[in-house]
Image 1 (tube, rainbow, N blue to C red):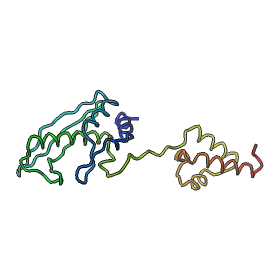
Image 2 (image 1 turned 120 degrees about the vertical axis):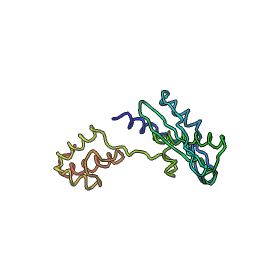
Image 3 (image 1 turned 120 degrees about the horizontal axis):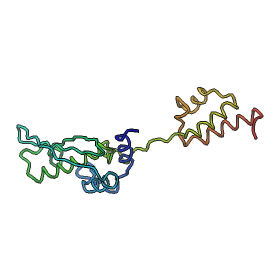
Image 4 (image 1 turned 60 degrees about the vertical axis):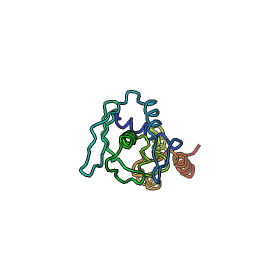
Length: 187
């Protein structure tokens, strides 16, 4: 598995809801909690401020980047008010606050709190599938019961046996063992 995938799976699985705040109609993760969590898992992570872009109307976009384990992700964020409208000629506090929001957005690009930016309540759990050992046990039962893999997969609405969700493993075993007993091959 690539390092980028390991980082994503580690950070995106963390539920940060107890630290989530709301401002106006937007949820956000405070930068200090994002940093503390990041340091627990990736203490070598680096955050860099890049030059801001000042637009013709006086509004500003801050640019930052974060590096974790040699992987760098840039991010940008406009300096806005509480209504998410661009601020013309923002103060240094406005810019500083936006930079730290951009930092949190950088952590989301690596997975931490990403679900907040998708307006989801909690991180999405990856559905676990059966282990190779469990698959072998099912294959053995399929051979003993002369069950076609295509029919088995169709019954569980999957394309391949290794896609069987682990929470359906016991059901699959029971189904195949019952078929084996009916055929007179049970214990």
